[in-house]
Image 1 (cartoon, rainbow, N blue to C red):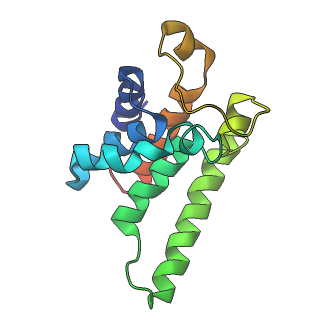
Image 2 (cartoon, rainbow, N blue to C red):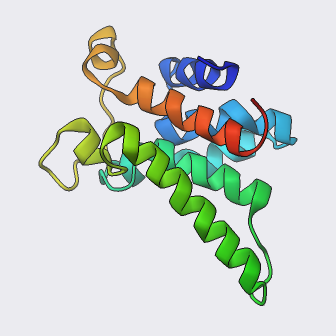
Length: 149
């Protein structure tokens, strides 16, 4: 396990959501403010506010890669092509190992959305979910893409 994967998993176990955990694990080496990044990623936990859509770990990975390597000009067609290719490669790498990038699929849930109230973080919560491993992997993919590992 890389330092970034271990850091992301530990952040999740402290109570950060899946997206925040990935973002915060790699933001300091990039010179990004932790509080700002935690706020930015706060909406993406639970597959976007517990809607169980795109996995928050994947969203966090793509946010950081966008900040580090993304394009900013609407006229930068080549930059857009390169960024979309990067996104598709990272999503495919995650999906190859986990079968999906969709939160509800990864958790084995049949529901599309849930109440906005997060579950209590107990030892049983952490044992019953694959989230720690998913977060670890997303952080490692992110670090590798950014040349941090």
